[in-house]
Length: 91
Image 1 (cartoon, one colour):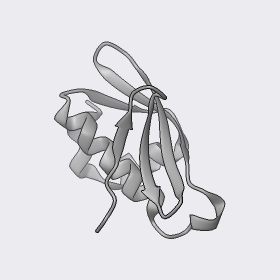
Image 2 (cartoon, rainbow, N blue to C red):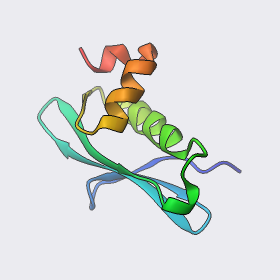
Image 3 (cartoon, rainbow, N blue to C red):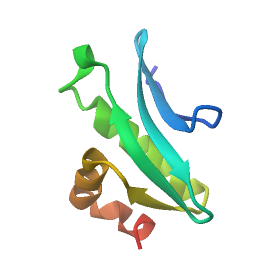
Image 4 (spheres, helix red, strand yellow):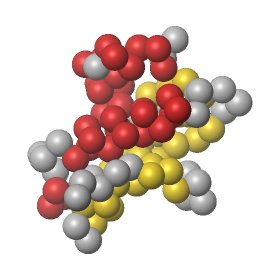
């Protein structure tokens, strides 16, 4: 079974379980947007596309809430630049 991204509202971050580790994307809320300020993938798991899966899942959750997204870290900015299917979230 594939793990899915969840919104941990108590910690203001999206989380993805990978084995015994957690990749996460911290965020701040505005009235209409989510600013993703930092993404973190455990060092041993880097280079496997986990960060991209995390951001994709976070963007899907943001879309389902009817919010916009602001990339506040370079990883998210690059992801948005390379995935035009999420352009509706940045406008």
